[in-house]
Length: 423
Image 1 (tube, rainbow, N blue to C red):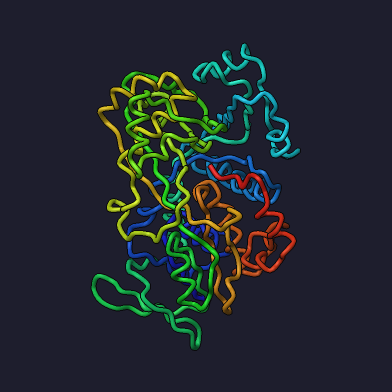
Image 2: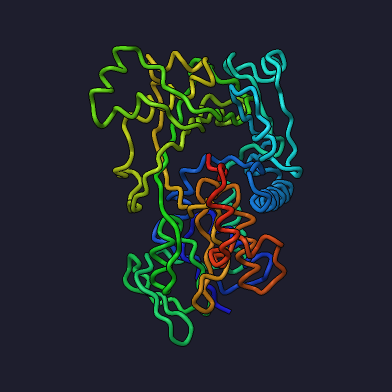
């Protein structure tokens, strides 16, 4: 059976890995016009968690963490997987609804006194009243994990094709037209897997499938923390509260007069997050805030992404300083060394992935991995490979497949949920 996987991001690589290593499929083609993991996968926050407001996603990410831990043991932790967890911080006094969202299967510890919060999370603002510490979480190097799986895939006989898929014909199997640097090439395959990341809808249309996804560009900031503002052992920390940014009266008045900037004077959404980058001896810090809600078509070159906001570094620094006051000096004197970057959250309205049969015969999708692509890649690739090889499936498989869209009761439940696990 010849399998063509369109897309060499971490989801496509993981699918290729499990097809080649677990299912012994040697005739697998991994096709992409870019170098592996050089597009959205290269912009990942590289965090992982099993905290989700629905048990299906908890089970899915638990499976992915299990698989990553097995690979960490196998490789001597080549991809630097940590286990410091997630810190969810809020100024709310009543967090019963947040605790209820975690479910019985998630290991958490709640810190509800100022003394305990200061002792265990000294970097947090003094106005934080409750902290939920999600135990099963941490960070890792997605690039190193992906590279390891890619090397194993090659060793198992897998093939890479560097080029852009420009057309797919369905006759006696599938013929994929690939525009390579040295000319056109036709790749014949019995099975096609759509792992095209932000271009997953485009590839789906080539195969006659209408995938219900949108792309939302989200930005991040990484900077050299010369002031040592963030403890090197700090867990990935998230501010669960909406906030108003700390402008001076003069700054606020000037922003309010500008139609394009007036929104910055209002209430901003929750979700500012921060973590150290580079281990205990490193000096860099990552900040993120997925406040953009405007869908856009993916740009071919992320470096020229028109949705990138030049104000984002200041916005995210101000937002993060509300949770971590030690960042405040960087508001007036920005870091001298920083990287402002971003990537797409390719997502469904319910913020669940699409993994499984795509509709047309022998076509599958592994996509819509939103902001959780790296952390879920192992389970997503393993699940897609199981669908392709008609192997045993986990209980949640049908709920994560495109077929769930035909279940009105499930869709009504998901679309009415107050939290979709978006960070």
